[in-house]
Length: 216
Image 1 (cartoon, helix red, strand yellow):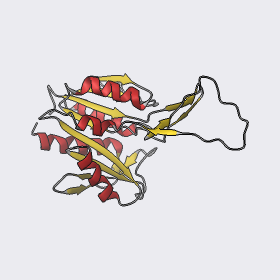
Image 2: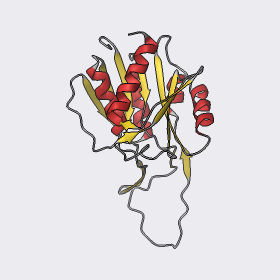
Image 3: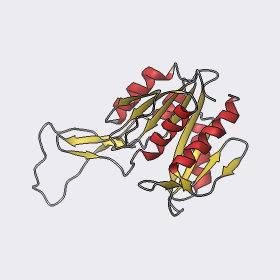
């Protein structure tokens, strides 16, 4: 189905260091991104998987893993590869903020409270969306807790995506840590809801949906 196509996928969390032993991160496991990589590879794609720190592994052929840690690392790697990809799937849970200053030594426990100044990380999907080439198909993910459809639609537009996969933490069995997921695929013209399924099955649904859109 995707023979001779290059698919670039981001997966997992990023870790934003505070000092040599601490970091800011989130609960992403990378399961969804890795399931997508395997689903695309099973359909003949050459997959470039840009992965944040995760315990996930794959032995599937045609998957090349690029391991990164921070949002800046991930952006640099994606930017380097993006121009050659036919499909780009931004499934990683990239940290929105990072510490303004990174201590070169472990911060000692002293005061009762501590103030941490954070600065915004680059929005990788939005940055790549601004420079994507004609013919490239871009897919984002949105994990929401309220106003799900409206928030996802806003991201679809501002990030110049062709479609966005919405997860709601209001749905049991969806989101981080679970082996299942419940998604709604949102395009400019319509929304398509899917039942709760294993992340492997969800990945296959997404791959089939994209195949129909790019006519492979």
